Length: 444
Figure 1 (spheres, rainbow, N blue to C red):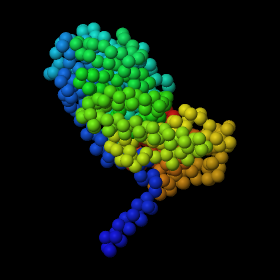
Figure 2: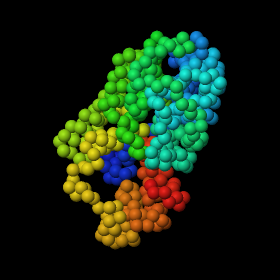
Figure 3: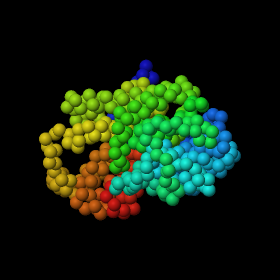
Figure 4: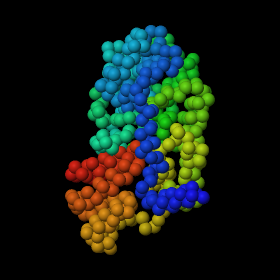
């Protein structure tokens, strides 16, 4: 009886905890920290003549040994980290680099090419004609989501990688342009190795997978990672179409690979294990996409959909679908915007008030600047950190340099970040808090 009373009391306490004290993604910081095990440094032989370097850089690099040289798949973010990987490969590689294949054009995968190419003049193959620079927001917001300036004491990881840009600044100095573009499934033999380069758009629209049919090994880029996929990136990049991603996963399944080499984190070995993971990944994307579209057809608006659309319990519990990087909520909002546009159907929002007007009117209701600051400080004490940040924003709209409002927002974001286990959300909260505390005037 005493045990039951204690349990009931514990449950009662939990029910009184404000929502903000729980990670919005459902992932705790402790889980995110445990996720670091995926990034431990290792040079792994996955099959005869096939090696993958994990944890040496933000992204993995693969070496395929042929009879007359080697093939490199992806090249890491920069020459510094590429050099460390090349030194590790030197213990197993024989002969010149005959080809380099980019699985996609993300900068963390293509920045060390000059190091691997050296003086060998390899073919450089990819599914894109040239790497395109991001437009506007991704430069600033990419730094925020990867936590490049987050203090070491608060930093955990970047979701799909241990870090990006914290130790070595982002650079394109090691990139080499390609000389062969693959736009449809292509068979080729390089250095005596039979392989196929197969377009498989997913996290990147220009993604290709490298398939070694004789070894049943597939290098799938970022199409399958040990995290819920980032379908709708919040850093100012286009949504990744779910239907394309699902089709690419079906293509991977049709090959019946026995070994899967992802662009980040550790390889998967065993045909049954590979199939189970890829099926779960595909089914998760399909489930959220189908639920969202069904809700849209019922006329439900984004704020309603994000409360209702959830992964089925078995998928939610799958370790490959924890929300370390992408989240279900962002995917739902991304699908809505892509399918139906920015307008949510509420007539009030046809021509919404400007941010300045709304802030001025709300401040007048709650006692001006002093009322907003006082209410924000109470929200902090009550553990309502998102509300505290919104109240601070009302003041900052009118005066972005208001020191007390900046401190209030920084405190609210720090508390949110410390509790969040989704790496993007956590790093973004903590990055903006850092900039506010440092007096940075960049709008965030």
